[in-house]
Length: 240
Length: 112
Image (cartoon, rainbow over all chains, first blue to last red; front, side, top):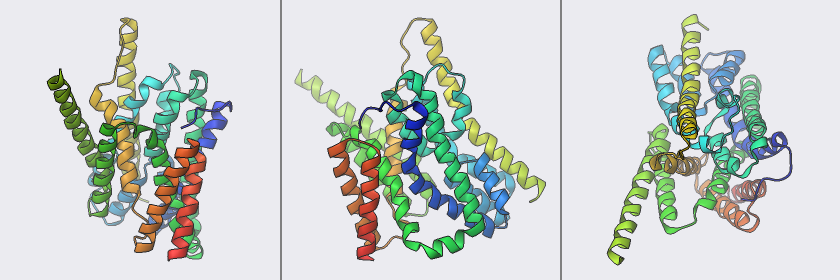
């Protein structure tokens, strides 16, 4: 990916966050529709998006609450789905500055923001990093909130009027992930590891355990990386 | 909505934030300690490997079309190919994503 440009950090963050809109808005509209169908008001659905702000787990939470599941179980399942976030913060620490703002900004650390930050932060000057993160996470957060509100108010009629857009726009997310990951396909070991991870995630997500796809595929990928690294090291030691 | 439901939502919100911020604070403290001791802090290899792998897993899971059909799968393949091709040429962020979505949409509309 090209180095960050001369834009201000905030402006660069907003620009980098724009591709997220294609993925966030249709999903947020769907969440608004489902939450309202499940008996929540538009305001309540929007507040869930403001404060929890974690895609898949929000769907799970409102569905479980609407189905009358015990609330403690709904909360536990929500946190279980979100537990993958524990690896995001530590992976960003080497690129963060000493600013006290970072802990507050972590409310905006979604899957997609992590993917963007993990690639973009190492390329930015330290002076721009906090502002960049504010810009990119505000674009994502606001689009999620406004999408939810829109879904609650007029979601069903919107998706009926433009069914093609509803199917096409979410492709922005895999396209973005692909672009963020592309520089990593730099050697055979990483190529094999990434292809294994992508394939396993795809296969699991096609089945009934969608929420397990990301953590399980990442663990399988880590195992592949470890096996390949040991194999290469063994080969090198034999050669010596 | 009932008070208990609001309490559950509040706990879920605080818990999600804690999952995001807790490990960050812990790692920052670890790095700062190394800085004071004048030693180099490094993430454990398994943790630094997991970062890109989480992105790869998100890519795999998000490749599934919203309404799976032969048309949407072919459109996904076209969109992925075009995104990779444009990235290879321009090495930028926005343009490959834009071309990928556009080609996905065109393929989807033509094939559907």
